Image 1 (tube, rainbow, N blue to C red):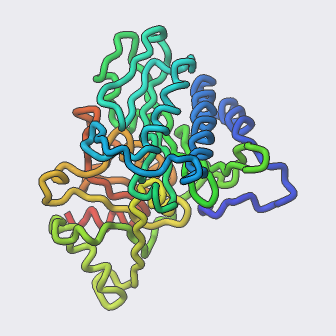
Image 2: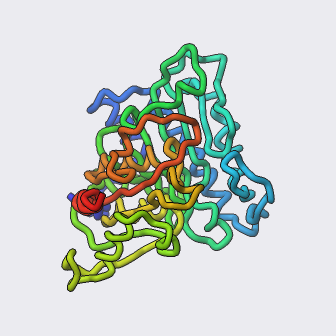
Image 3: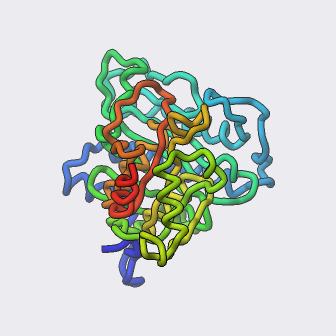
Length: 338
């Protein structure tokens, strides 16, 4: 089964997110609290999507001229999306704490430290694209809470311990893509009735590909294995890989990984020789782990150099890593260059 599993029978009754989650709960003994948390995130992503669509009309574009904890200039919409997610987390009974890429510290919900889950999120991925009307999104990750004595260390769990992960992409269509550990499923927001409808069931990444995504402007900084692999790709059918490759690069992880889930390919933001990228560029907890969880659930692979990302033990809340993920056979090929 491929990622083109859009509802084939237009006469069939579309399946709503709520119905799908009830079905998953019954078939796979998924915790009801986890299902409600997914619905909770879907509702807030829908609200963020509405603000995104307003664009200049809503006065949400442009920079704040302030830096976040990552040392990056925040866009107005970064803060708006972060506040929208935080404002309503307090009343979700399943949550013991939350962490955001935009916040220096975790937020512990002290009135319910015995709640079962922790939520981590990148409220708006692809900030550099906000002002040019290119696809951006929200990424989230759900961990089991070790409570009741919670602290920052409670969030530093390897990616394979995630119980759910997903993202919303705000593009020509607004989509929610997530996994509860039983495959990856995509829902499209019906703009006419506000319902999330199952349109992509059991997404599967093709094992072979001839498409890669990487920021070529960084070539001079790459380590030799990455440089060698890309040079072999560029050599085309007459080179050692014996096929012609296409390159894609949106500079929004959500959009680039969404393309990989839809049709295969490789997304790469590897470590390189620049001082601020030696450990990697993307955040392990908010970007690399949730996206790697989705990709592996869909039959792909995800590595930081040759190390599986989901096996990495986080050392800090905002740790950065290198990311190479996508079609399984191509990721194995890249790993062999190391």
